[in-house]
Length: 442
Image (cartoon, rainbow, N blue to C red; front, top):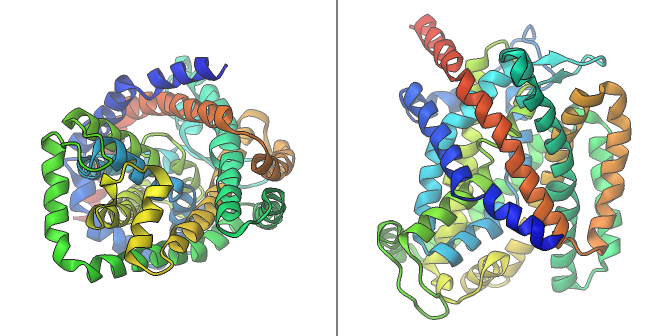
């Protein structure tokens, strides 16, 4: 079974998927005339301004962004960046940046569609995302894609964002501090239950203070390393850019990498980290208190900017500056090695970063999975889903999850396909709504 899923996964995340993801982003970027890059300052102003009580939704636009970031900023920002550099060389970080610039247009379009086509469930909560903009924005012949997305999204969360995350936390705490995995699972179960059983408003409330705290703390500690080695930064940046266009020679334990490897692993890990195109983030943005899809789209695109162009860059720069990428080590161990070389007790930065990032990922993805289940079965399925989500957490800490990880990774790719088809078909509508918004502003 594992060999079969591995083979499926190889195709699911192969060149065709990467071309589809990048192609959709380039198409949307061109149609928007690079608005998502030009309007970054305006997006930050929108994020910080006050809101009218007359605007419809469940949570503030800021809370919607923090909820989406709680699911997005995760192990990909620590282990994913390191894996990309270990396999593709420093040039992989450059292609992660390029993927983020393109992905901002994808994330913008997702949120515009999510707010425009959202609905209210029987309990009065707002629901949106790919399943709703496929159902409400496309012809009936496409509606089966909405059901497919909801099924893949509901199942993927239990693997990628629940059991695998709790397993990662239990392993790192066991290795560093000798904590029993089952004890970690029980504590995580109680903490997650205390948040998600309160619904999106409690998830958003916790995310609104925890996500800025963990992201700013990680960025601050990374900047300490970077500023302490400021003389090495120009050479590190030059290495990253040069390695993106020229093969990287074997050095130390690093086996060498071609330009294709840098491109392939940079794009794949970049998309995995910021989730642009997967269709997960718009589920959170659909709950925002706003009457204007374009404004929420601009706030949503900041998620990709913050995740990849800021947080992932911090990890990548520390690894390249410290020279750890030549060691032959990969994943979270490589990031740990880099911080340990740079700071006394630096390994604990990665340990606690992984724990916090994994915890918030479980919170954000619980809402994604819940909205997928509501689309399929209605509001009556909310409580059973939340209970099942909570009970699965300790299970993840005590079982071997290689197969679960592979299946979840494949389901993640299957989520992207219906979403990307919908975005391509709804692209002209997104372009028109955007033009109309800026024309009215002028």
